[in-house]
Image (cartoon, rainbow, N blue to C red; front, side):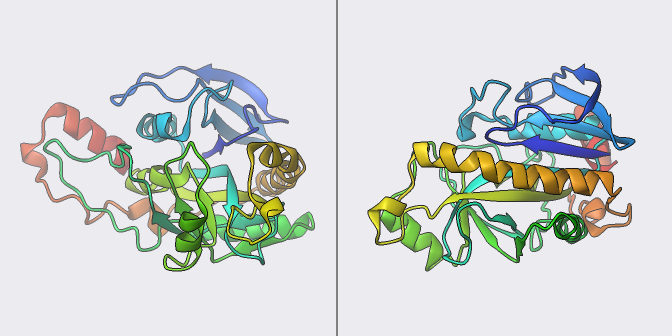
Length: 283
């Protein structure tokens, strides 16, 4: 089943025939909001607004573990996120869409980044953290509706909620070699990998961050909101095309086997709670 995680400006999924809502309590607390289940083009879908339905959660306040656990519990096998980002490269103009395949974790705050620990040890490979088959399907859908998407880009994730300094912007685009900067995809992408979910985000560039010499190009919240609306429609077109074309990742995708050799703790020493978590993540 496909799950959609809506970012800024996406608090409900248009065109979704709502079948019901799920309010789950997880071992990690509550998700950002109730999860909507419905159908679109005869496909079962789940939808979760990342920041809550009234955008009440800062990036650092999102309970990423609860969100991914809940989607997995409800049967998700693939996740598409939508995220506002700043562009660190001139070729990615404000309004452009990207499908990042690499991540640079520049989060310094205390976000919970793994399902493991407390007696359950595992080390999941994130050399290729996103799903190529999911990105290929989204690129094909974008082409079908005349939308260009950038591929093979690196997303740097920062804490927020403040917008970055010029020094940080230069570091991320220079020394770190990043193309996009945002506040929400870490640890979301890595938790999805731990849960054996195919994951890809549609990144919507709102601005050039603040690395350009022209101060008029430096990002402000007012600019983000003004530019974001039109760009969001592009992302929705691509998402709708992906769904209506019946695209999906195969069950034998490598993302769906990421725990195969990652867990080090013997099953016989795990307690009932740990076994339950492992069985959910491994399903």
